[in-house]
Amino acid sequence: MNKLLPRILILLLVSLLTAASFAQKPRLKFKSIKASDGLINSTVQAIFEDSYGFIWLGTHHGLQRYDGKSFTNFTSEGTDSTGLSHNYINDFCEDDNGDIWIATSIGLNWYSREQDRIFHYRWKRQNGQQFDDLGATKVLHDDSDPDIIWITTGKSQLIRLNIRSDQADVYNLPVDGIAFVLKPLKTRQYQHHLLLGATELFIFDKNSGQFSSVYALEQSNKVRDNRFNDAVFDPGDPNTVWLATGDIWGRGTLGGLLKLNLESGQSKLFTWKNRPGEIPDRHILTVCFSGPDKLWVGTRNYGALLYDMKQDRFFNYQYNEYDEGSLVTENAIRSMLLDRSGTLWFGTWGDGASVLSPALQKFTHY
Image (tube, rainbow, N blue to C red; front, top):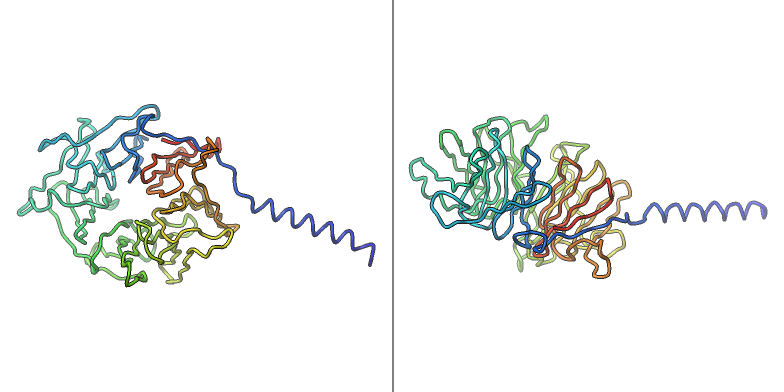
């Protein structure tokens, strides 16, 4: 028995060392890109990749198109027909012609690929003028109908716009609040539906025009702004959606990362518990997968989190003034995008942007 004891101790030590190395935080190098590098504004609200491989950055002072080497800027020109209607950019989508539709806080815009210009979209139908200056929050091109663009507005509306006939159908959300989640559903159960999230999560039937409530967020009497801020579908299960919830200003004690199965209704909320390896923030702004079991989480107060689903562990990345290769911010990650090259883009709230090339294990900040 005494002879076995050293072997048991050695095996135990090896096991502990293996577990410790397995839980180590991945070492990733960041590089910043800020105003001095050509960024038009330090807040990057939305990031989009078009079919030509250009990256579009929506900021609080216009938008930029990045071709891999330089930026092309588009801002409001103060005219009725050309230029952005407003410089506060919320979202992008692309239609079958390769034109880009742009949601701004005042007006819907479209970029003509052929003319290389941006136009303020004017609604031509009867009483359409009321929509010329609408606050558009999300835009989505309908894959099943090339003429349809879906738009959510600051007036708790969902609009179905036919860009060929200019016919618009308006649907009022069942709750007051802005829908910051607008995603197409492509499951066996939901083939003609959209997923919308405000303070409640809804499934919208495009054929019937009806909303069905899926999940209602808990609200506080003090800060009633716990809402759905972003969503991404699990690469391994189209019925499972990961949702960023919380208050965008970082107020209150509610919110977190929500995992929800739309078929079974089962859910799990990851929220702040002040324990190592757990999520350090209640307020989540954006989510993005970089691999089948690697989920990136953008927080309001603690930079970016990498959730390793196999280890069930969160790793935190923030700005470190003593490390040139650290993430560009220690605060809010407002937007994220995984482009076709496998590069991950991070847009921040006031500190510029960062990109991560998995091949080089390096972040580049813009």
